[in-house]
Image (tube, rainbow, N blue to C red; front, side, top):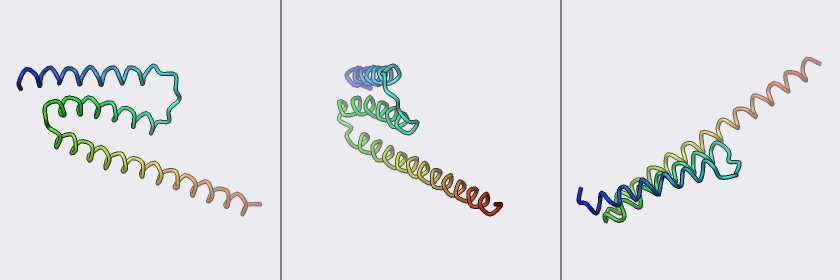
Length: 100
């Protein structure tokens, strides 16, 4: 790795670290899914900074695509879980109504 790439590597690490620290101590109330999204975005930001400065836009495009697919899968999983909870709740309410 050429010295300038190594410098940008450490700049990317520092950028990610600062973003994660801000996210950790910022006075906001994020859901679990929002916190995951923020964390992944912080990791991607540092990686993108490093790779774009090294001229590797394809690596950044690939990581963004992987993160988007992964994030979409996690989001869909949350939606499926929420639907399953609602169906169980409705079934339990129906069973309670039948007992009366």
